[in-house]
Length: 112
Image 1 (cartoon, rainbow, N blue to C red):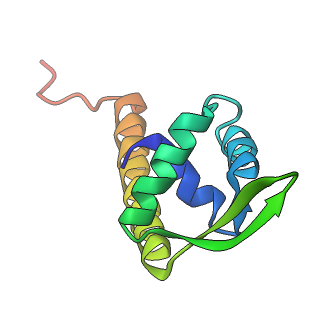
Image 2: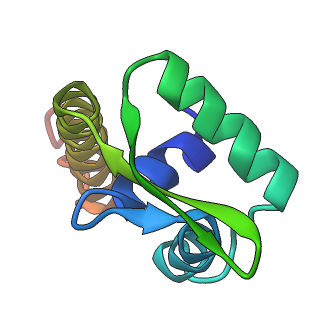
């Protein structure tokens, strides 16, 4: 899963949000590393809607413009849960291997 998709699904995990709030939340979650542009955001949301991972929670008109609020679907929650578990397993393996590399090497062989 690409990072922007993971971040969007994560941003919707605890509450429905509209587009601008999603842009802000993704920036917070990523520690400011990822700044979604409007076109990228709505392209990703359209794709996630098509995949059944998000749904339109509500629509309202604010200052003459339509504002949609998006929410995770049950399928989106399952996909996010599976991805979080996958990432956790990869991180655990990386930590295991790093710790093994730092551990002092045991000498093999016989002293003369």
